[in-house]
Length: 120
Image (tube, rainbow, N blue to C red; front, side, top):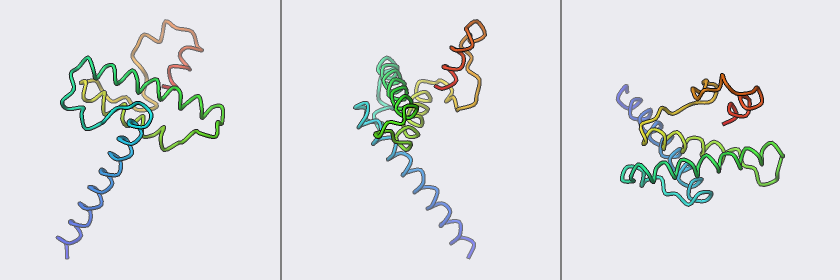
């Protein structure tokens, strides 16, 4: 019975991971025109361009959410952030999660800029 439970857990984990990848691929394809499976074969300069496009898409989605726009989609927002983390990992950067302090010299900026940077 124990091997069957292990298979069930493995299957569920695999399905969850596949669902997350599908969400990220769809969000990137629809909002940025980027195919996620290409990350492994993409040159570093193109990855940094992709990262900047994804960051801009996240900003637009955040603004839609703050303005309570009818087209805001929380799932798209989450998928874009997950895709951003995947691209950062492909670039060799750490995938920064929400709530972690940013190490970008924020101590020299005004309070408004620090708050704005935390929203990223």
